[in-house]
Amino acid sequence: MSSLVTTYQLLDGKRCGDALRVDIATGAAEVKAKRGRAPHLAAVLVGNDGASKTYVESKVKACESVGFRSSLIRMPESTTEDELLARIKQLNKDKDLDGFIVQLPLPSHIDPEKVTLAISPDKDVDGFHPENIGRMVLGLDCFLPATPSGIVELLRFYHIETAGKHAVVVGRSHIVGTPMSILLSRNAYPGNCTVSLAHSRSKNLAELTRQADILVAAVGRPEMITANMVKEGAVVVDVGIHRIPDASKKSGFRLVGDVKFDEVAPKCSWIAPVPGGVGPMTITSLLLNTLKASRHAFSS
Ligand code: NDP
Image 1: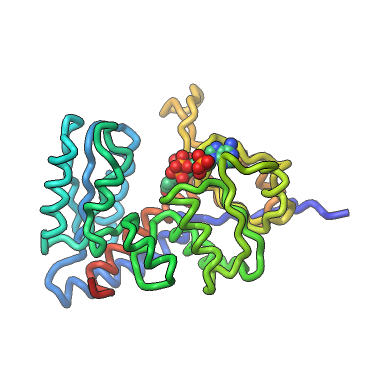
Image 2: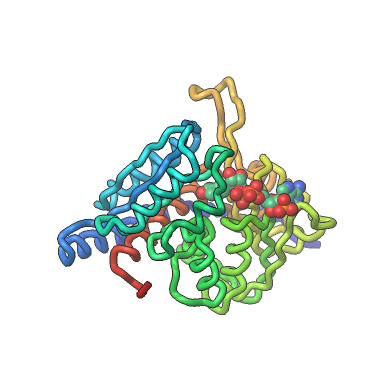
């Protein structure tokens, strides 16, 4: 009979992010001393989506906390695709700028793929451009996509053993699940996992997730991963983030992930909570990529 793990430890993204940001701030000061200006990140926000505005503002705030320059470029909801592409062209050429992001989702009349392709790979600090994705697959120097790379840093910070483990990633999006599966399977630490990548067509999902030593939930469905889907002693990383209406909260909502935390956590050895797990790490990765861009770490 297997014994139930009753104490779990938190993969605390705030603590890990704060520790990494001390080094990032030192790096930013060095760049400023050498180049006469601090690393500079711009964020383009098109339209009035409330959650996107909050995300972008927290990215700008994070830049300030480590001594970066940041610019918030707001464009109206009515911005045409051509206008946005023209703005991106200008940003690609702007020598005063190390990297920039275009916050997703975009208004429905703008094709996000065209936008991703228009961003110069050497300023693509979100790591979404096919050139960066391709370099990641080949294990070459590149900008890693922020969320999976933040998860890798979180596993490293807490010395989570990964070699030979079975990692199950639920969700295959281009920005989270698919790159996560590649990073966990590469010949490196953290990595060297045997990886299963599950999605909406996967059969017997619970049977698969119960085999996971490391379970990454990036499904986009509130509290879908329940206790019966998790092996005792597993390491669980919850990527999901959802606002659930809650009249008892001042804000009127509470944040939950893709994992039903209260029932899953007691089965885990480690678990990344929502909020405070993956979220702060995603922003930290963006800062790391911007610092890298400002150092001209690889030739374009
Ligand atoms: P997407 O909606 O792009 O992808 C969701 C994936 O989950 C798809 O691959 C889909 O499969 C799969 N899926 C959906 N339903 C099921 C199901 N019932 N069983 C198995 N697989 C299923 O989401 P993202 O990857 O962009 O985001 C995932 C979550 O992470 C969201 O909650 C998002 O808000 C959050 N997020 C959090 C970040 C952070 O910094 N904390 C950053 C980015 C995202 P299929 O491909 O077959 O449709």
